[in-house]
Amino acid sequence: MCSQCGAPVEARNAVVGRLFMAGKPPICDNCRNGQWQRWSKADYQEYLKTDHWERRRQRSLALAGQACQICKSTKNLNVHHNDYSRLGSELDSDLFVVCEKHHKMIHER
Image (spheres, rainbow, N blue to C red):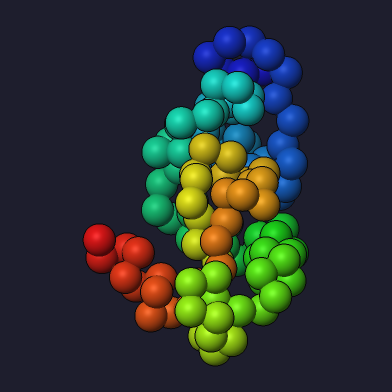
């Protein structure tokens, strides 16, 4: 049950399930919107190592034509989160494919 509204919560991947089991309060999709800050940097780094994220990442790369969506480079590609509100159950529009150069620029601004 969601710790904020009491709605049923379903873990969509193993990391989310482990976080719930580790004492992180479960939060439903409606309450989680805008709540990505509840994930620590360590939780996020763990999530990026999962098979779930790798499949999501590969889908984003395929949708972007295996190229940076800014400069069309095909080298050193990263998948950047535009929106963290659905972390673990991202929509295609939550992700953006960029080369390392543009990814660094996004984080430096």
